Each structure stands twice: as C-alpha cells, then as structure tokens.
Amino acid sequence: MEEIKPFHIDIPQADLDDLRDRLRRTRWAAQLPGGWSRGVPVAYLRELAGYWADGFDWRAQEARLNAFPQFTTRIDGQTIHFLHVRSPEPGALPLIMTHSWPNTVAEFLDVIGPLTDPRRHGLDPDVAFHVVAPSLPGFAFSPFPEPADERPWSIERVARTWAELMAGLGYDRYGAHGNDAGAMVTPQLAALDPEHVAGAVITAGLGIPMGAPGELDGATEEELAQLGLMAERMAGGSGYGAYLAARPQTLGHGFVDSPVAQLSYLVERFKEFDGWGSGDEPVDRDLVLTNAGLYWLTGTGASSSWPYYEGAAGLPIDQSVVPTGVTHGGPAVMRRIAERGNDLVYWGEADSPSHMVAMAAPGPLVEGIRAFFRILR
Image (cartoon, rainbow, N blue to C red):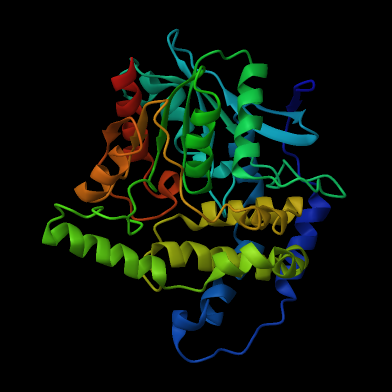
C-alpha cells in the first residue's frame, strides 16, 4: 500500500454549473402507456431532474461527507478512497463497511455517527467501532486509471485489497459489514483473512434456496409462501443484471454524457429493488441525488457498473472460518439453509422498507450490527 493522503471533496463550481445547464437542456422522451411497468415515467423524472437542477443543495451534501475524515491511497495500482472515522471509545473495534451498488459511501452517512460514537447518540457505549468505509474500485473517488487495468476487479480482488488496506492502517483485528455488493465482499474478505477478521455481518443474501435436494425439508406453508413472494420479486424487473454482465460499456456512454440518463437508471434501480410505483419513497431524494451527483461529478457512472461483468451479480459465498451474522434474515427456513455452510451466530429479523438498508432504516441496521458484535466479545 502506498502513502495515505488526506482527501477533501471540493467539486469545482464550473462542474456544478455544467450539470445544471445539461439538466435544463434535457431532450425528453415521449411518455409511453403503462406507467412504471415500461420504465421511469417522464413526469416523475422531469420533476426530480428539475429539483436536482434548481432545488438540490450539493454543497450541503458535500459538507456532510467532508465532516468525516477522508483519505486516499493506492493498492495494487488502484486509487482507493476511504472514510476513516475513529471512535472516542477506548475499546472500539475497527469495522470495514462496504457499500452497495448502485451506491457510494454516501450510503453510510446516517450510520457512521451511531456506530463510532454511540454514547453521543444515546446508545450504550459498550459496543463501538472505528469505521473504515472505502469507495469500491471504479466508484466515485476511487476511479479506474486510464486505460483501465485489464485484470478483473472481481469480488476476491476487492477483498484482498480491503485486507491490505486494514493492515496498512495498523488494524490487526477487525470486523466487516456489507450490503448488496458489499454483502459479497464481506464473507469473501472473511474467507481470505480469517486470522484478522473477527466477524462478518451482512444485511441479507445468505440462505436463498438454490434447489438443492432436501433444502426445503421442514419448511412450513407460511415460510414457503414467503419464499414464493421473494422468488416472484427476484424473477421480475428489467433484466439489468444480465445486460450489465454482458455489455456494461454500452449504457456507460449515456451515463457519462447525460445526467438524466444516469439519474433515470439509478431511480429505476431504487424503485425496482423497493417495488415499482410503491408510493412514498423509502429513501430520501436528497440521498438519491447525492449518490447520482457522486457518479456524475466523478464520471464513474459507467465504471461503477462494470463489476457485473466481473461476476458481481451473484450471491455471497458461504464460509465457516469466521462467525457470520445477518441483520435482515428473512424466513426461518433461510436461516436453516444458511447454517449449513456458515458459522451463523446471529440472524436478525429486522425489516427494511428498502434494499438500500442503511439509507432507509439506519437505526435497525445499527442495532443489528451492534447486536452481532456484542455476541463476539
């Protein structure tokens, strides 16, 4: 790992002016019948883009991010940006948190405070963390070099990079957490660095039935009904995963040339994950636009999609060398499946209104992470 350098976000005003100009000059598509079933409705997107241009305060969100100490380094030829927020509690455990896709470290804005300084947030200080939250390679302030490294940035390579980052920070024992893409990195990190990873806790992804013989033995009618609803939801949608796994570059041209193309794609992902036309948004739109802004202003909307091409559209691996926890576990039958391949010590029953758990329900996620590591003390 190369030298660690302090980092501060300071987007040039000219870039913000250019963004507003592009938003105001958008050529809008005609509205097709069918509402959300055919994609993001024009009226919905026009209103959101108008707010992005004339109501959203980027500088306020930039200041929220800059309130946390940030750094960059280089590992394996790749720039790695990360937040490193140390706890005032003397017994705090280092915790590396890996964000989801399509997201950024802004996903963790509302959970870092309670995790690092629980006393200040009215929580018992017996469990506290020094949080390290890196930007995944190709995301935001961890841009790929030009030309991009031809070696795949697979989940395993990311995990090895995280292990090197934590070692470079001087952490000999640490925990790991992740959601979505981060939920794939976290158990892989545990499997690769079990001598140093104290525990791995993810939001979800373990115990999903894959059709193995006897997998659903003992499942109740209620559990089977719950699994059916999950399967129905996972089977529907736009098919974005298969497309990105095959042709991520094609959509990328639109992502880096049109902020509305970028915004439309991100909004569809958020809505698809959380239910088409579900009414009230489970994630605050300022957080959605902060995420979109980080992609747009760093030109990484395309490269952030490339992990799908490298096999990131899968499920977390099973590993039994490090204790595992799941904060949003699902039906009990899934727990029984997950226990077969993992040293599962915590199965939370929290429910989230969104796939983007830290953004939609930060409180229950914080409690789940704390409950898991409390078991391991």
